[in-house]
Length: 277
Length: 254
Image 1: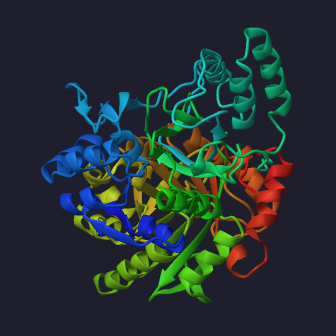
Image 2: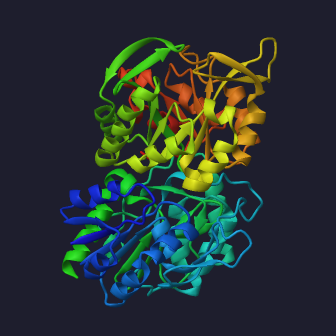
């Protein structure tokens, strides 16, 4: 039984529908005890960090989720649900200290920069379909290297470059020499159509059968911080983590329930993972 | 890279899809959910249901539509038309709408944008603007409300900026001059607004041919392009449009 956590903030039916379509038995519940007994937990994403966390705490859902994740119960946070997995978030904190989150992963969720590193303005919220770049060996935070981090910051410097290029540069642990070439390639590619095709599967069970470069639907203004848990990234004004994994706990920035075939596949992967766990 | 979006818009009355030509002469094009699913199969990026009756009696029908949509659709959808208060918007969000679009009510009370953005997040609030070129002017457009019947005297670009400042997550910009004309988007209008605001702009009104979509992105600098009847009546498919956009070098999700 998968429990979709209801914290009174709107649309969770789409998520429940997607999980059910993947063959899962789903209960939508606010009840901390139901969450504590769940075989798997999905924390969907609607609303603002501070607001959501307040409701979750009032209902005692936070302890139930922390405790379940601690026992290795499969968990999937979606959009704001991903944000809430982190230590804190500064959405609507309005000058005050960031609001504590569930604290499953270290770091603070912050507003996405409105400009790329070269000063190019980007439209925020980040709304629409963007490519997801799977990091090699992305499972439970292993396989991340300094090289990968360097590749990503180079990616951010390119500013809005294609996710597939990000993938290759992140994997190669790109040097600045490579980055120049990547930039030139980027310029040459600037007017080429984005015809991405699934060509590679990740080690992460969540992305089984989903290629790096696949499009998912995003709608958000805040981004998760870099951490060892990052398993996939997306680039808008900056390159940011769009999927994380910490043991059996996953989080995605995009909305699989709104991402058509690719999203349905990801939800089905989670359901299958939860069955095996 | 963020793909440019193609959005079919369904004008809905009494739970059925209709499309006005210059806001009159409505024709029936079927069930909104079924149509939306067809568009999902064709790789539409999202859909918009615009409630064109939007009297209080009909709101319940539209809330039902939103509920059905959240049960059955696998892509994002927006509901627009007739919202007067945060409570109206709350009802639609609770029914499962990803976003709502507000038009006349936001002009009447701009604080509604701020309140709704604060309550549901900026990403959930689209401000729809119906704009008409001021006669004799090349770069001035006036905002109209009440389904294009009432002039406001407000400048469209200035209003778009205010809406963005107040927390709108996107601007849905319709050229009244072009709507139903099949002459293509008003790219000058679209570009003026797209350059003035730091939020995404959806171009609307005037599509008649395949190349108009790419023009809206390349010349209008829009983040998304919207059309209705060319899709509803099967003159063009979403796929054809996206392939043409890709040929023009525009990033799309194919």
